[in-house]
Length: 609
Image (cartoon, rainbow, N blue to C red; front, side):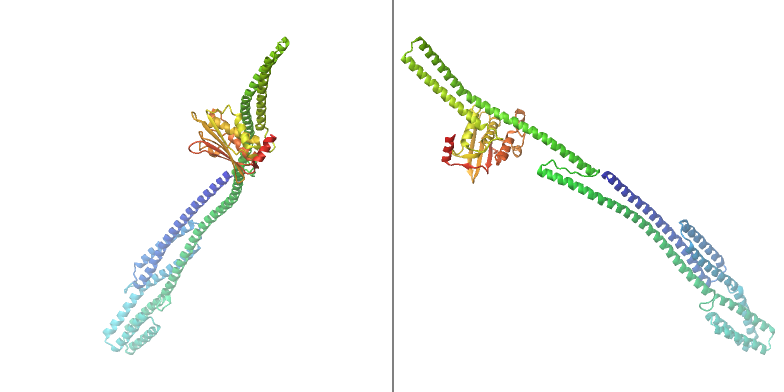
C-alpha cells in the first residue's frame, strides 16, 4: 500500500472513530435523558402511590365522607401518571410486562381500598351515621330507659354489658365478645325475671342486633392482627412497594444495560478500527523502516567508500521505494558523471602535463640556443679561415706567419665549437633525464641535488636573478632510488606556481628547496616567502580545479597532479602549510624510498654518468 493511500486510510479511520464517538455520545446522551425522564416519571408515580398509602392511614384514623371523593381523585392521578409512564416506556420499544405487573398490584390495592371505603361508609363516617350511628342510638336509648326505671339489678347488668362492649372495641379480644353475649343473656333473663314490659326486650334486641352488625363489619375490617381488610391492605401495600422497587430496579438495570451496551459497542468499534490501524501501521512501519535502513546503509557506504556503483534495489511501488529508485537513478547518473568528469580531468591533467613539458621545452630551447649560436659562430669563423687558406694555397702565396695565424684561429674556432657542442650534449642529456616517460620508467638511483639543479636550470630564463633568489639546502651526496621524472614534474609544478602565484610585485621572491633524512624518512621541502595561500583554500588545496587565479588563466590542476604523483607514484605523504605572515611550504614525506648519503657511492655514480 502506498503511503498516500495509507495516510488516507488513517484519516478515514480517525474520522470513523470520531463519528463512532459522536454517535455513541449521542445515544448515550439520549439514553441518559430517557433514563432521567423515566426516573422523573417513577418519582411522580411513587409520589402518587405514597399519597394513596398516606390516605389509607388517614382513612383508618379519621374516616370522613369526603374521603370517598379524595380517593377517586388520587386514583385518577395515579392512573394518569402510570399511563404517561407506560406510553413513554413503550415509545422506546421496551417490554411493558413489569409495568403491567406493577399496575396489577396497584389495582388490587385500589380495589381493597375501595372495599375499605365501602365498609366505612356502611359503618358510618361519624357517630350519627351508618350502622355505628344506629347502634349508638339504640345503646343510648337502652341505657337511658334502664336508668329511668330505677331498677338497680337491670342497670348493673346493662352497665356491665356496655363495659364488655367497650373492652371488645378497645382490645378486640374474642373473650370480651363472649362475655358480652353472656351479659346480654343475663340482662334478658333479668328483664324476664322482673316481668318488665316488652319494650325493654325490644330495645335490648335492637342494641344486640346493631352491636352484632357493627362487630361483623369490624371483623371484616380487621379487629385481630393479620386479619380482615386492614391486613389485606397491609399485605397488598407491601407487595405494591416491593413490586415498585423491583420494577424500578429492573428498569434502571435495563437502562444501565443499554448504556453499557452503547458504550461497549462504541468501544468495540473503536478498538476494532484501532487494531486494524495498528496492524497496518506495524506493517507499514516495518516496510518503511526496512526501506529507510536500506537507503541509509547505501548512503553510508557511498559516503565512506565513495563508491557510486552501489544500488539500493528496493522492491515495491510505494513512495519510499520510489525514493530508492530515484536514488539508484541518481547514483547511476553521478557514476556516469564522475566517469565523464574523470575522463575530462585526465584530459586536463594530460594537457597540463603537456603544458608543463612545453614550458620545459621552451626553457630548454632558450638554453640550447646560446651554445648552438656560439657553435655556429665558431663554424663560420673556421669556414672563413679554411677558405682563406685555400685561396692562399691556390695563389701560391702561403706564408709561415699567415699559416700559423690560420692554424691558431682554427684551433680557437674548433675549441669554441667543441665546448658549445659539449654544452648542447649536456643539455640534451639533462632534458632526457627530466622529461622521461614516467609511466614506463623504472626505478633508478639519482642524485637529488643534481636533479633539482637541472630542473631549475630548465627555468633559468624565467627565474631572473633580479626577481628570484633560489637556494638549495640538499646534502651533496644524497641519492634516492626512485623515479626522477616524477620528482622533476613535482618541482616543475612548484616552480610554475612560484612564477604565477607566489611573487609579490616589487619584491624578490626567495625560494628554498631543502631535503633531509629523519628516522629513515626522506623529507623534501619547497618553500617561498611570497603571497601565501588563502586559509579558505588550504583544506581543499590538493583537490582538482582549486585555484585563486580562476579568471587569470589558472586551471587548479598543478597541486592535484603533485598530490597524485606523491601518493600514487612515490607512495608518500604531502602537506601544504601557509603561515599567517605569508609564504608557503610544500612538505613531502617519503617513507618507502631507498636512499644513500655515502660519498663513495656518489662518486661512483658520477663516474658512471
